[in-house]
Image (cartoon, rainbow, N blue to C red; front, side):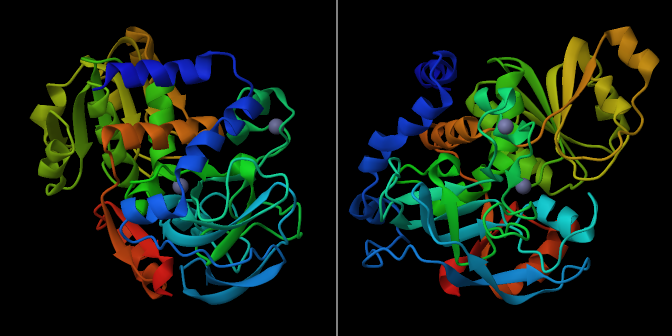
Length: 403
Ligand SMILES: [Zn+2]
Ligand SMILES: [Zn+2]
Protein backbone atom coordinates (compact mmCIF):
# COMPACT_ATOMS: atom_id res chain seq x y z
CA UNK A 1 0.00 0.00 0.00
CA UNK A 2 0.98 3.62 -0.35
CA UNK A 3 0.92 5.20 3.10
CA UNK A 4 1.53 8.72 1.91
CA UNK A 5 -1.36 8.43 -0.50
CA UNK A 6 -3.66 7.19 2.23
CA UNK A 7 -2.62 9.92 4.62
CA UNK A 8 -3.14 12.48 1.92
CA UNK A 9 -6.60 11.20 1.18
CA UNK A 10 -7.46 11.11 4.89
CA UNK A 11 -6.68 14.82 5.12
CA UNK A 12 -8.93 15.45 2.19
CA UNK A 13 -12.05 14.76 4.20
CA UNK A 14 -10.87 15.81 7.63
CA UNK A 15 -9.44 19.24 7.00
CA UNK A 16 -12.76 20.95 7.36
CA UNK A 17 -13.19 21.94 3.73
CA UNK A 18 -16.76 22.71 2.88
CA UNK A 19 -18.53 20.50 0.43
CA UNK A 20 -18.58 23.35 -2.06
CA UNK A 21 -14.83 23.97 -1.66
CA UNK A 22 -14.12 20.30 -2.15
CA UNK A 23 -16.13 20.16 -5.32
CA UNK A 24 -14.51 23.31 -6.66
CA UNK A 25 -11.07 21.92 -5.85
CA UNK A 26 -11.46 19.71 -8.88
CA UNK A 27 -10.85 22.62 -11.23
CA UNK A 28 -7.10 22.07 -11.38
CA UNK A 29 -7.36 18.32 -11.89
CA UNK A 30 -9.98 18.86 -14.54
CA UNK A 31 -7.74 21.34 -16.31
CA UNK A 32 -5.03 18.68 -16.51
CA UNK A 33 -7.44 16.31 -18.18
CA UNK A 34 -7.38 18.07 -21.53
CA UNK A 35 -8.97 16.31 -24.46
CA UNK A 36 -5.56 15.70 -26.01
CA UNK A 37 -4.03 14.34 -22.82
CA UNK A 38 -7.05 12.14 -22.26
CA UNK A 39 -6.97 10.79 -25.79
CA UNK A 40 -3.31 9.88 -25.49
CA UNK A 41 -3.69 8.25 -22.10
CA UNK A 42 -7.02 6.56 -22.78
CA UNK A 43 -6.58 4.53 -25.89
CA UNK A 44 -10.21 4.42 -26.86
CA UNK A 45 -10.99 8.06 -26.24
CA UNK A 46 -11.07 10.45 -29.15
CA UNK A 47 -9.38 13.83 -29.08
CA UNK A 48 -12.20 15.30 -31.09
CA UNK A 49 -14.81 17.40 -29.41
CA UNK A 50 -18.20 17.82 -30.95
CA UNK A 51 -17.75 21.40 -32.09
CA UNK A 52 -19.85 24.21 -30.60
CA UNK A 53 -21.57 23.01 -27.45
CA UNK A 54 -25.24 22.25 -27.82
CA UNK A 55 -26.92 23.06 -24.55
CA UNK A 56 -30.47 22.76 -25.80
CA UNK A 57 -32.96 20.10 -24.78
CA UNK A 58 -32.75 16.92 -26.79
CA UNK A 59 -34.25 13.53 -27.41
CA UNK A 60 -31.72 10.83 -26.74
CA UNK A 61 -31.30 7.20 -27.76
CA UNK A 62 -31.67 4.90 -24.76
CA UNK A 63 -32.29 1.27 -23.90
CA UNK A 64 -35.17 0.61 -21.54
CA UNK A 65 -36.61 -2.30 -19.62
CA UNK A 66 -40.30 -2.57 -20.40
CA UNK A 67 -41.29 -5.16 -17.79
CA UNK A 68 -40.13 -7.02 -14.71
CA UNK A 69 -38.60 -9.76 -16.85
CA UNK A 70 -35.95 -7.36 -18.11
CA UNK A 71 -37.11 -7.16 -21.70
CA UNK A 72 -34.85 -4.39 -23.01
CA UNK A 73 -35.49 -2.50 -26.23
CA UNK A 74 -34.39 0.80 -27.79
CA UNK A 75 -36.31 3.79 -26.49
CA UNK A 76 -36.12 7.56 -26.85
CA UNK A 77 -35.91 9.74 -23.73
CA UNK A 78 -35.82 13.52 -23.20
CA UNK A 79 -32.80 15.28 -21.70
CA UNK A 80 -33.23 18.79 -20.37
CA UNK A 81 -31.56 21.92 -21.74
CA UNK A 82 -28.36 22.52 -19.79
CA UNK A 83 -28.75 25.06 -17.00
CA UNK A 84 -25.98 27.37 -15.80
CA UNK A 85 -24.45 24.68 -13.57
CA UNK A 86 -25.15 21.69 -15.79
CA UNK A 87 -22.68 19.46 -17.59
CA UNK A 88 -23.71 17.66 -20.79
CA UNK A 89 -22.01 14.28 -21.16
CA UNK A 90 -21.88 11.98 -24.17
CA UNK A 91 -21.92 8.57 -22.50
CA UNK A 92 -19.14 6.21 -23.56
CA UNK A 93 -19.46 3.42 -21.00
CA UNK A 94 -22.22 2.39 -18.63
CA UNK A 95 -21.98 -0.78 -16.59
CA UNK A 96 -24.65 -3.13 -15.31
CA UNK A 97 -25.16 -3.10 -11.54
CA UNK A 98 -27.31 -5.66 -9.75
CA UNK A 99 -29.41 -2.71 -8.54
CA UNK A 100 -30.54 -2.22 -12.12
CA UNK A 101 -31.93 -5.76 -12.06
CA UNK A 102 -33.48 -5.41 -8.58
CA UNK A 103 -35.22 -2.28 -9.84
CA UNK A 104 -36.86 -3.71 -12.95
CA UNK A 105 -37.80 -6.87 -11.07
CA UNK A 106 -39.59 -4.73 -8.49
CA UNK A 107 -37.55 -6.16 -5.60
CA UNK A 108 -37.57 -2.76 -3.86
CA UNK A 109 -41.03 -1.66 -4.98
CA UNK A 110 -42.84 -1.33 -8.30
CA UNK A 111 -40.72 0.08 -11.13
CA UNK A 112 -41.79 2.87 -13.45
CA UNK A 113 -41.66 1.45 -16.97
CA UNK A 114 -40.11 2.13 -19.37
CA UNK A 115 -37.11 2.05 -17.00
CA UNK A 116 -33.71 3.28 -18.19
CA UNK A 117 -31.25 2.02 -15.56
CA UNK A 118 -27.52 2.67 -15.29
CA UNK A 119 -25.63 4.48 -12.53
CA UNK A 120 -22.04 3.62 -13.39
CA UNK A 121 -21.46 6.12 -16.18
CA UNK A 122 -18.33 7.45 -17.87
CA UNK A 123 -18.32 9.79 -20.83
CA UNK A 124 -17.02 12.92 -22.47
CA UNK A 125 -18.16 16.42 -21.60
CA UNK A 126 -19.65 18.03 -24.70
CA UNK A 127 -21.19 21.10 -23.14
CA UNK A 128 -21.06 23.13 -19.93
CA UNK A 129 -23.37 25.80 -18.56
CA UNK A 130 -22.12 29.35 -17.98
CA UNK A 131 -21.40 28.89 -14.26
CA UNK A 132 -19.66 25.50 -14.45
CA UNK A 133 -16.19 25.66 -12.88
CA UNK A 134 -15.15 22.02 -12.56
CA UNK A 135 -15.38 20.83 -16.16
CA UNK A 136 -14.87 21.98 -19.68
CA UNK A 137 -15.64 20.49 -23.04
CA UNK A 138 -13.55 17.46 -23.85
CA UNK A 139 -13.03 16.36 -20.23
CA UNK A 140 -13.77 12.80 -19.22
CA UNK A 141 -16.38 12.69 -16.47
CA UNK A 142 -18.36 10.19 -14.43
CA UNK A 143 -21.85 9.99 -12.98
CA UNK A 144 -22.70 7.57 -10.19
CA UNK A 145 -25.80 6.79 -8.20
CA UNK A 146 -26.85 10.35 -7.30
CA UNK A 147 -27.71 13.31 -9.56
CA UNK A 148 -29.21 15.73 -7.04
CA UNK A 149 -30.03 16.34 -3.39
CA UNK A 150 -31.21 19.32 -1.35
CA UNK A 151 -27.68 20.46 -0.49
CA UNK A 152 -29.00 22.10 2.68
CA UNK A 153 -29.87 19.38 5.21
CA UNK A 154 -27.37 18.21 7.81
CA UNK A 155 -26.64 15.03 5.87
CA UNK A 156 -25.96 16.87 2.61
CA UNK A 157 -23.75 19.33 4.50
CA UNK A 158 -21.83 16.36 5.86
CA UNK A 159 -21.17 15.13 2.27
CA UNK A 160 -23.79 12.43 2.67
CA UNK A 161 -25.99 13.28 -0.29
CA UNK A 162 -27.05 9.63 -0.49
CA UNK A 163 -28.76 10.13 2.87
CA UNK A 164 -30.43 13.48 2.04
CA UNK A 165 -33.25 14.10 4.52
CA UNK A 166 -35.30 15.83 1.83
CA UNK A 167 -34.95 13.06 -0.72
CA UNK A 168 -31.92 12.13 -2.76
CA UNK A 169 -32.49 12.23 -6.51
CA UNK A 170 -31.01 8.96 -7.69
CA UNK A 171 -29.71 8.64 -11.22
CA UNK A 172 -32.67 6.60 -12.42
CA UNK A 173 -36.17 6.00 -11.18
CA UNK A 174 -36.33 9.07 -8.91
CA UNK A 175 -38.77 11.96 -9.41
CA UNK A 176 -37.19 14.31 -11.98
CA UNK A 177 -37.27 17.88 -10.60
CA UNK A 178 -36.69 19.39 -14.02
CA UNK A 179 -38.80 17.47 -16.52
CA UNK A 180 -41.32 15.71 -14.29
CA UNK A 181 -41.67 11.97 -14.54
CA UNK A 182 -38.66 10.00 -13.34
CA UNK A 183 -34.93 10.24 -13.93
CA UNK A 184 -33.31 8.14 -16.65
CA UNK A 185 -29.92 6.54 -16.19
CA UNK A 186 -26.88 5.59 -18.16
CA UNK A 187 -28.25 3.03 -20.58
CA UNK A 188 -28.43 5.98 -22.95
CA UNK A 189 -26.25 8.11 -25.19
CA UNK A 190 -26.30 11.37 -23.27
CA UNK A 191 -26.97 12.73 -19.78
CA UNK A 192 -27.28 16.24 -18.29
CA UNK A 193 -26.20 16.60 -14.64
CA UNK A 194 -25.42 19.44 -12.22
CA UNK A 195 -21.64 19.64 -11.94
CA UNK A 196 -21.80 19.16 -8.16
CA UNK A 197 -22.85 15.57 -8.87
CA UNK A 198 -20.34 14.83 -11.64
CA UNK A 199 -17.04 13.08 -10.91
CA UNK A 200 -13.60 13.83 -12.33
CA UNK A 201 -11.93 10.90 -14.09
CA UNK A 202 -8.13 11.29 -14.04
CA UNK A 203 -6.42 10.91 -17.40
CA UNK A 204 -4.84 7.54 -18.01
CA UNK A 205 -7.50 5.39 -16.40
CA UNK A 206 -9.12 2.56 -18.36
CA UNK A 207 -12.48 4.22 -18.91
CA UNK A 208 -14.53 1.02 -19.11
CA UNK A 209 -12.74 -0.28 -16.00
CA UNK A 210 -13.44 2.87 -14.01
CA UNK A 211 -17.20 2.92 -14.70
CA UNK A 212 -17.98 0.27 -12.03
CA UNK A 213 -16.21 2.44 -9.43
CA UNK A 214 -19.21 4.79 -9.59
CA UNK A 215 -21.45 2.36 -7.69
CA UNK A 216 -19.74 -0.97 -6.94
CA UNK A 217 -16.54 0.86 -6.05
CA UNK A 218 -18.02 3.47 -3.72
CA UNK A 219 -20.41 0.97 -2.14
CA UNK A 220 -17.53 -1.21 -0.98
CA UNK A 221 -14.95 1.53 -0.41
CA UNK A 222 -17.18 3.62 1.88
CA UNK A 223 -17.47 0.98 4.64
CA UNK A 224 -13.76 0.18 4.39
CA UNK A 225 -13.07 3.87 5.12
CA UNK A 226 -15.85 4.37 7.68
CA UNK A 227 -14.86 1.32 9.74
CA UNK A 228 -11.22 2.30 9.25
CA UNK A 229 -9.75 -0.95 7.97
CA UNK A 230 -6.05 -0.96 8.84
CA UNK A 231 -3.01 -2.70 7.36
CA UNK A 232 -2.64 -6.23 8.70
CA UNK A 233 -6.26 -6.51 9.83
CA UNK A 234 -8.28 -9.50 8.72
CA UNK A 235 -11.03 -8.49 6.31
CA UNK A 236 -13.69 -10.92 5.12
CA UNK A 237 -15.51 -10.46 1.81
CA UNK A 238 -18.74 -12.45 1.56
CA UNK A 239 -19.69 -12.92 -2.08
CA UNK A 240 -17.31 -11.94 -4.87
CA UNK A 241 -19.20 -10.43 -7.78
CA UNK A 242 -19.13 -6.89 -9.12
CA UNK A 243 -18.95 -5.40 -5.62
CA UNK A 244 -16.93 -8.08 -3.89
CA UNK A 245 -14.08 -8.22 -6.37
CA UNK A 246 -13.50 -4.48 -5.96
CA UNK A 247 -13.65 -4.82 -2.16
CA UNK A 248 -10.87 -7.40 -2.40
CA UNK A 249 -8.71 -5.09 -4.51
CA UNK A 250 -9.28 -2.02 -2.27
CA UNK A 251 -8.63 -3.88 0.98
CA UNK A 252 -5.53 -5.57 -0.41
CA UNK A 253 -4.23 -2.15 -1.53
CA UNK A 254 -4.73 -0.93 2.02
CA UNK A 255 -2.56 -3.78 3.28
CA UNK A 256 -5.33 -5.79 4.92
CA UNK A 257 -5.35 -9.58 5.05
CA UNK A 258 -8.28 -10.39 2.78
CA UNK A 259 -10.32 -13.59 2.95
CA UNK A 260 -13.07 -14.34 0.40
CA UNK A 261 -16.15 -16.51 0.86
CA UNK A 262 -17.79 -17.53 -2.40
CA UNK A 263 -20.23 -20.10 -3.73
CA UNK A 264 -18.43 -20.36 -7.12
CA UNK A 265 -15.47 -22.70 -7.18
CA UNK A 266 -13.82 -21.01 -10.16
CA UNK A 267 -13.65 -17.74 -8.21
CA UNK A 268 -11.26 -19.16 -5.60
CA UNK A 269 -8.21 -18.59 -7.79
CA UNK A 270 -9.52 -15.25 -9.05
CA UNK A 271 -9.80 -14.06 -5.44
CA UNK A 272 -6.12 -14.68 -4.89
CA UNK A 273 -5.22 -13.01 -8.17
CA UNK A 274 -7.12 -9.92 -6.97
CA UNK A 275 -5.12 -9.84 -3.72
CA UNK A 276 -6.91 -12.15 -1.28
CA UNK A 277 -4.75 -14.26 0.97
CA UNK A 278 -7.34 -16.99 1.39
CA UNK A 279 -10.58 -17.96 -0.35
CA UNK A 280 -13.18 -20.53 0.72
CA UNK A 281 -16.40 -22.07 -0.50
CA UNK A 282 -19.41 -21.66 1.80
CA UNK A 283 -20.03 -25.38 1.34
CA UNK A 284 -16.64 -26.21 2.88
CA UNK A 285 -17.84 -26.72 6.45
CA UNK A 286 -14.40 -27.43 7.84
CA UNK A 287 -12.94 -24.25 6.36
CA UNK A 288 -15.91 -22.20 7.54
CA UNK A 289 -15.57 -23.55 11.08
CA UNK A 290 -11.87 -22.68 11.11
CA UNK A 291 -12.66 -18.98 10.62
CA UNK A 292 -14.58 -18.42 13.86
CA UNK A 293 -13.70 -15.25 15.84
CA UNK A 294 -10.92 -14.22 13.47
CA UNK A 295 -12.05 -11.11 11.56
CA UNK A 296 -11.67 -7.40 12.26
CA UNK A 297 -14.24 -6.40 9.64
CA UNK A 298 -16.48 -8.23 7.20
CA UNK A 299 -18.39 -7.00 4.16
CA UNK A 300 -21.40 -8.87 2.79
CA UNK A 301 -21.96 -8.15 -0.89
CA UNK A 302 -24.37 -10.97 -1.75
CA UNK A 303 -27.41 -9.46 -3.55
CA UNK A 304 -29.96 -11.80 -1.98
CA UNK A 305 -30.99 -12.50 1.61
CA UNK A 306 -28.96 -15.21 3.36
CA UNK A 307 -28.25 -16.55 6.85
CA UNK A 308 -25.92 -14.00 8.43
CA UNK A 309 -25.10 -15.60 11.77
CA UNK A 310 -22.51 -18.02 10.37
CA UNK A 311 -20.47 -14.97 9.34
CA UNK A 312 -21.26 -12.81 12.39
CA UNK A 313 -19.67 -15.59 14.46
CA UNK A 314 -16.47 -15.16 12.45
CA UNK A 315 -15.96 -11.65 13.90
CA UNK A 316 -13.64 -10.99 16.78
CA UNK A 317 -15.11 -9.34 19.89
CA UNK A 318 -16.71 -5.93 19.23
CA UNK A 319 -16.20 -6.08 15.47
CA UNK A 320 -18.65 -5.34 12.65
CA UNK A 321 -20.18 -7.07 9.65
CA UNK A 322 -21.40 -4.52 7.10
CA UNK A 323 -24.15 -5.59 4.73
CA UNK A 324 -24.18 -3.73 1.41
CA UNK A 325 -25.69 -6.38 -0.85
CA UNK A 326 -28.82 -7.90 0.65
CA UNK A 327 -31.08 -4.86 0.93
CA UNK A 328 -33.91 -6.96 2.31
CA UNK A 329 -35.03 -8.14 5.77
CA UNK A 330 -31.99 -9.66 7.46
CA UNK A 331 -32.19 -13.38 8.07
CA UNK A 332 -30.64 -15.52 10.74
CA UNK A 333 -28.91 -12.97 12.95
CA UNK A 334 -29.10 -14.33 16.51
CA UNK A 335 -29.34 -11.86 19.39
CA UNK A 336 -27.73 -14.12 21.99
CA UNK A 337 -24.81 -15.06 19.76
CA UNK A 338 -24.21 -11.46 18.71
CA UNK A 339 -24.43 -10.44 22.37
CA UNK A 340 -21.90 -13.04 23.40
CA UNK A 341 -19.29 -11.48 21.11
CA UNK A 342 -20.72 -7.94 21.27
CA UNK A 343 -20.64 -7.91 17.48
CA UNK A 344 -22.39 -5.37 15.28
CA UNK A 345 -24.38 -5.87 12.11
CA UNK A 346 -24.42 -2.66 10.07
CA UNK A 347 -25.80 -1.39 6.79
CA UNK A 348 -24.34 0.96 4.22
CA UNK A 349 -25.48 2.11 0.80
CA UNK A 350 -23.44 3.81 -1.94
CA UNK A 351 -21.62 6.99 -0.78
CA UNK A 352 -21.52 10.76 -1.10
CA UNK A 353 -20.06 12.66 -4.02
CA UNK A 354 -16.79 13.64 -2.28
CA UNK A 355 -16.23 10.05 -1.18
CA UNK A 356 -17.02 8.78 -4.68
CA UNK A 357 -14.33 11.09 -6.03
CA UNK A 358 -12.03 9.70 -3.40
CA UNK A 359 -12.51 6.09 -4.51
CA UNK A 360 -11.80 7.03 -8.13
CA UNK A 361 -8.61 8.80 -7.07
CA UNK A 362 -7.64 5.86 -4.83
CA UNK A 363 -8.14 3.45 -7.73
CA UNK A 364 -5.99 5.62 -9.96
CA UNK A 365 -3.16 5.85 -7.41
CA UNK A 366 -3.17 2.11 -6.81
CA UNK A 367 -3.72 1.05 -10.43
CA UNK A 368 -7.03 -0.62 -9.63
CA UNK A 369 -9.54 -1.37 -12.39
CA UNK A 370 -12.73 -3.39 -12.34
CA UNK A 371 -12.60 -6.70 -14.20
CA UNK A 372 -15.09 -6.40 -17.01
CA UNK A 373 -16.45 -7.65 -20.29
CA UNK A 374 -17.56 -5.14 -22.90
CA UNK A 375 -20.98 -5.65 -24.45
CA UNK A 376 -23.11 -3.80 -26.96
CA UNK A 377 -26.51 -2.31 -25.99
CA UNK A 378 -28.41 -5.10 -27.73
CA UNK A 379 -26.80 -7.56 -25.29
CA UNK A 380 -28.10 -5.84 -22.13
CA UNK A 381 -30.98 -8.24 -21.46
CA UNK A 382 -28.82 -11.30 -21.93
CA UNK A 383 -26.06 -9.85 -19.74
CA UNK A 384 -28.55 -9.13 -16.92
CA UNK A 385 -29.60 -12.78 -16.95
CA UNK A 386 -25.94 -13.81 -16.69
CA UNK A 387 -25.48 -11.49 -13.70
CA UNK A 388 -28.39 -13.20 -11.93
CA UNK A 389 -26.90 -16.62 -12.80
CA UNK A 390 -23.51 -15.61 -11.28
CA UNK A 391 -21.85 -15.76 -14.70
CA UNK A 392 -20.47 -12.20 -14.74
CA UNK A 393 -16.66 -11.96 -14.44
CA UNK A 394 -17.02 -9.42 -12.94
CA UNK A 395 -18.92 -6.53 -14.55
CA UNK A 396 -20.66 -6.12 -17.89
CA UNK A 397 -19.82 -2.72 -19.31
CA UNK A 398 -22.01 -1.44 -22.13
CA UNK A 399 -19.97 0.21 -24.86
CA UNK A 400 -22.21 3.11 -25.84
CA UNK A 401 -19.76 4.22 -28.51
CA UNK A 402 -20.68 1.06 -30.43
CA UNK A 403 -24.30 2.14 -30.87
ZN1 LIG B 1 -30.21 17.09 1.82
ZN1 LIG C 1 -25.29 0.08 -8.31
